[in-house]
Image (cartoon, rainbow, N blue to C red; front, side, top):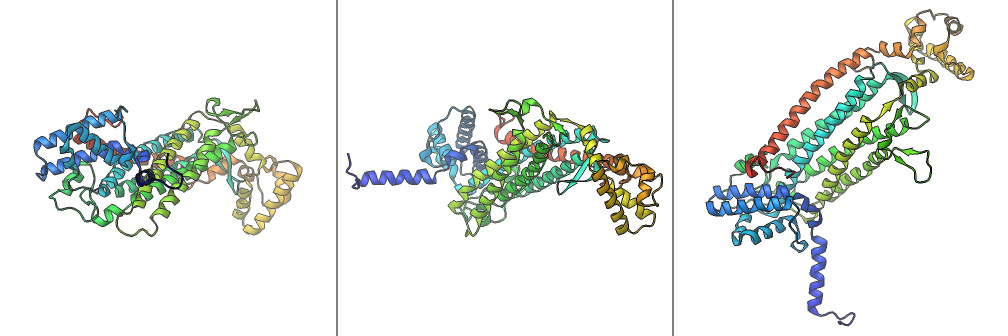
Length: 489
């Protein structure tokens, strides 16, 4: 036994080595990149063959070994070694075990700096596609709810107070268009991530005749990156992706908050499926909207992921620094949180039932057509401020008497202002108040129908975008692995 405080040199070196490897290693999380690391290696091997650095036999041996290794990793039958630091070195070691010393030629003209950038871009493309598909799936559910509630009247709120009547369809389409902006942002983000870093090397390129344009095309990228120093230090695409995912989660959090409120007895606007709520461990009468609460809570994770990236990148000198290893966990977590939340909220809305009668009743008790009565007097020549004060007095009397304005007779209206005629009775019905707002982007049935048409056109573009990205990614897999190998194999 070694005396405390007097370790031998050997034990000290071993201890220090283990500390360094444990602290700097990334295998615990970057193992998630194994699929795309092998795909990228296959493309690099093709480049080395074209550059005559690999013979045909060597290329075939490396290619066969990589494909067999990928299939084995997919099945979970391969043990990775943490002491090899990361997924890149593990795959190289496994390939060497499988095919021998020729595996050492694969890293010619390549650095882990451009290799990890490649893996992150390929991974991000796949997960962006998955996220876009989930956005469209949620949009379809929202559109279905809206179409079924074109004439369902509800209070529109400002400052969380009843303000003016709108339709449930118009309200749900507000969420639809927020998600559309999310789709558009992520689509743009994909284009900036869709550049190939292979060939940038550690920071100064390499001396081998590698055709960067050809390898970019083979991997389905739009083009190679423009500057080797920028390439290995660039994590803009990671940060931007996490920002886009944060915006998605922000909108889902807002939607979740409404679901939580609407599900309370005080609101009673929505009833969630018992299968998608949880019971209390103590109070047998309770069903809790845990899915919505978690979707709201995960906004904290996403904002943390974004702040983590921004803080990590602040002030980094060019080119590569080990700090950049800290990009992967926020990226992985952001994708997982956003995609899971999109799916969960979609499931929650699919099984929800809306109480449109309760929504309509809330419009009456809140005197939501007060603004319309003021507008009526303005149209009769009354100055708006005078009309506003008249209706304000009517509302106060309504609350004092417990009698909504909508139930007033024409005689009662005239007591407040003789300009009120019989046609004023129409102004105090929420349904008619909504239909008078027949402007582009407004809540009238005609305006909302037009928004459906606009949304349908956008959905077609979204689906076309998804199809294009899917073809690019699957095309990459087919070219390098063959159509028989799939990401889910």
